[in-house]
Amino acid sequence: MQQAITVQEARARVLAMPCPPRDREVVPLAQAHGRFLAVPIAADGPWPTTDRSAMDGFAVAAGVGGLPVGADLPVVGESLAGSPFARRLASGEAIRIMTGAVVPPGADAVVPVEHTSGFHGARVTLAAPVRAGQNVRKQGSEVVAGQLLMAPGRRLRGAEIGALAVLGHALVTVQKKVRVAIVATGDEVVPVERTPAPHQVRESNSWALAAQVGECGAEALRLGIAPDEPQALRAMLQRGLDEADVLVTIGGISKGTHDLVHGTLAQLGVGTVFHGIELKPGKPTFFGTRSREGRDQFVFGLPGNPASSFTVFDLLVRPLLLRMVGADPGALGACIAASGASWHGNARLQAIPARLVGAPNGALVAELAPPSPSGDPFSLLAGGVYALIAPQQRPADGAIVGLAGGSSGVVLP
Image (tube, rainbow, N blue to C red):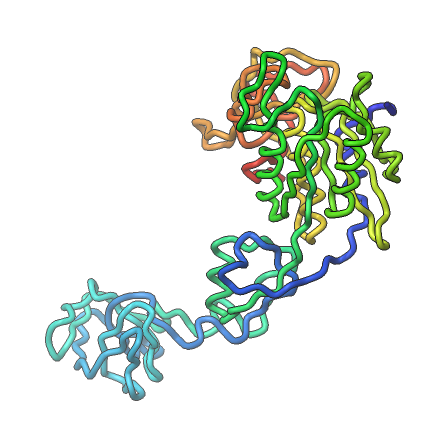
């Protein structure tokens, strides 16, 4: 194993890898959720498209001087969201108008109904002064024609899907999904549906990693469990390299006599970028590349303990998957620890599951999970981010800790 490097250096090396633009595909709007945009989206016109009412009330012509309390105006019609008033409003007239309805030419203000004598009757009396522009969403006041609304690489969530629908994008051009092959290794792991013997464990890591891959908008290919036998392992790793953009292996990368993954990857043409990071959990982590059809394939070898593989994925694999589709991989941030007196210093950087909670002063603080070994799969339930504890640091209330986004997607600047 090479000399271990810091997590920061490992992250920098991973994100320095060349990631050429991906192929695109066009999908129906109903299938675009969670995908990454491949083209810029601009407004095809102003928004609002016309002057619109921001209130239920009366549209009036206030003019330069406005209208005073007690002004009494004839009500000459109405403007509804689906049925606008048919002519120009003259000075001294009023119409009933509903929220979102078109403000007709000639009108320059909307009086909320609660500031009038009410909707009933042929005339309306103002109970408050009115000035021009009041409660009117002017044409183009929110978005101008041609304005860039979404850049390539943006993840399409609910708000983006709604905006695309407003703009009439029934079809959406997105990045092709990154394909991630996942290979679990080890004679001690058995499929999840089997009852393990005392010396065995159910294979859970690939299920967790596949879910993490999906959270990144990528496609996970779970290839199964490779035994600690050279030929079978080589065949499964070759399949992963043949079928995916990124290969992630679980286990078999340490110094044990049956840790065969690193050597087999080398035989398959995978060059080492680094092997070993100064992190607890996750020290044996491997990262390498292999050229295929003019592009680099990326290979991660993750430790076999559940907390290790899950944590290293969030700190190193997730950022690369996002960068490959042009998205922002995020950054490491800082936060105040809400608790952590039970944690002791360690010779390596520690990544501790944490959750962000509100302090009495309104600030966000990191509440650290209690200490747990890296083989404990349930420790990961304690939080959606990681507190990064420097070597020999013992976090206590009020200590500044590093912060990295996890499955929650939270990253502080």
